Length: 319
Image (cartoon, rainbow, N blue to C red; front, top):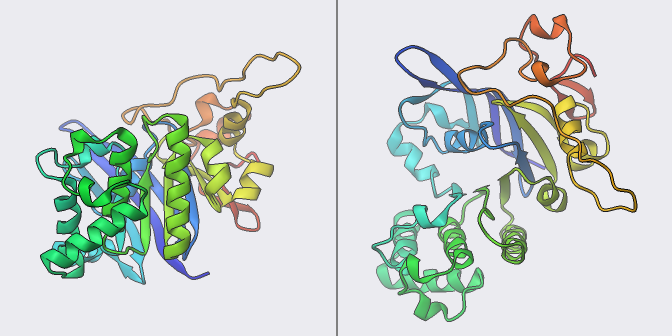
């Protein structure tokens, strides 16, 4: 498959008067045509910052320090803002984590979708309205022609998320970034939203970057997985490689911490210690304070991603 999006050595920092703190360090991964990539990690690990960097939506005091974000061979970080607007929402779209804060509460949902269509597809007002209503139908909103005139607060959480999906798809993007798209939804609605995303991805041949902390969701939908910890990707590979043979101690710890139902009662395993804050990132390997395998060698320098199996990368020298 052809590579659609290629991120190379991305570094993003947030500055204060006293210091410069990296939220994302040396992040590299690629997304192929029609592929689903699961970007997995705990809250605060840098997943959303990475996604916002792809769309160049990092605002001060945040700054993209270095790296490349290649789309169709062009480095998005080198484009002027006017050029970038053609890619943002058009070629690469994003579903944000909380639809109620992403949708404008004073405009009807139909108007918000129609404006995106008019901007990116250069359609007339009437054409944009017809396309918007059809999109609302595609994402499973009943009575779409009537719901077109609804305000965000008149819809349930699941319906608002469907509106966000319709808006993201309005310009027929090649890449869709879904940032925790099922947050705050009940389990039944979560399953419906994920099924909808996968169905739309298949019919539209999109590439999907799914950002989540839920390993169960990733197991069901992803082709490739990137495990993120404290601003770094610590393991990267196919779904089979990561789930059948996790290599990094953090990845192993995540799988051991998943609750299981069995005949024997066992105590749930946890990873000792705490996730480091952005201002207190350890030297050397960022995971070494919590790692049972670590020694002085792990403290000497930053650990690169090392290929261990065919295509499986791990940021650990003790594997």
